[in-house]
Length: 215
Image 1 (cartoon, rainbow, N blue to C red):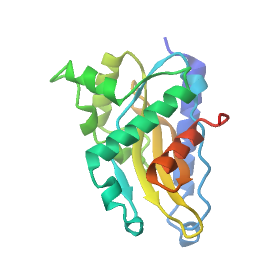
Image 2 (cartoon, rainbow, N blue to C red; image 1 turned 180 degrees about the vertical axis):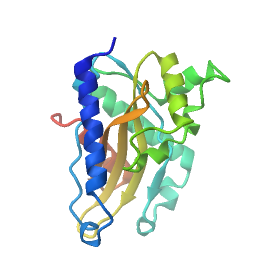
Image 3 (cartoon, rainbow, N blue to C red; image 1 turned 30 degrees about the vertical axis):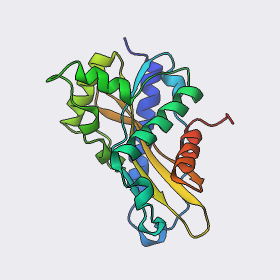
Image 4 (tube, rainbow, N blue to C red; image 1 turned 30 degrees about the horizontal axis):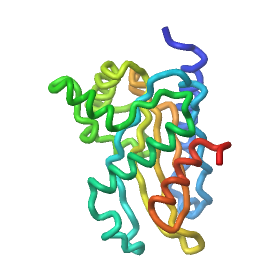
């Protein structure tokens, strides 16, 4: 049986997503607005539960950074990003039983023909603010995978972008959504931002901003 308070929390988050999507139009005056602060993960609502953490599938960097050599190997870059995200979430939010990308792959590989490959599920599309209801086939894939994992919620790092604003160090922007796989709906969305002299430091600080209150 689901926890009504928990569901209320996530539904409220979904309405916030809708409100923000409607409020943020393509007005020219808003394009250079100050970015919204990173919203902390709602770990109180998922404490004690098994929550899937899907692999990152999209990393992009501004051409002005000239990082072709540093992040040009896509598989190596994605694996390193997955490791940073999973390591810091596990350490900083231990009240949640995180099922990371490596374990998700093992679960999916033990069920060929049933579970989709976690690296090939089209999660980058979830970075768009107007996506609230997860479309098929991704909705079905997540529900099936979570049936094998033994949980309900999925945390999806949908995209990681690197840029260098004129007045700042390198900035990482990690788009993150939380999905209730039973109803196929996004209940939490934020962009975690962090700055550093290299991509890994910037990403680390972005993930730390998801779980504030710790060093």
